[in-house]
Length: 98
Image (cartoon, one colour):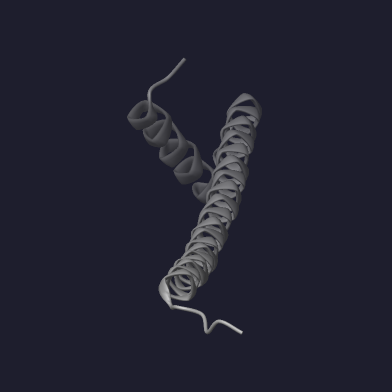
């Protein structure tokens, strides 16, 4: 297995030979293999980018859902507190006797 710099150097060497018209058949096969490997890497990166974008969208949506849930919770909490206060006031308010 070659390292990235070795592979890049080999790719440049083969491309140079191709452009000069002196590429040997076995070198053409090597070049094709290197190009296919680069294509796979580009596809893998595109797939990873798509997954990351979908994850970011999901996280954003969850954040929106959490904010909406907190707002609703606060509204119910306020309504509950208000009802408790009104009940307490009603309990403490003397009722006229008939």
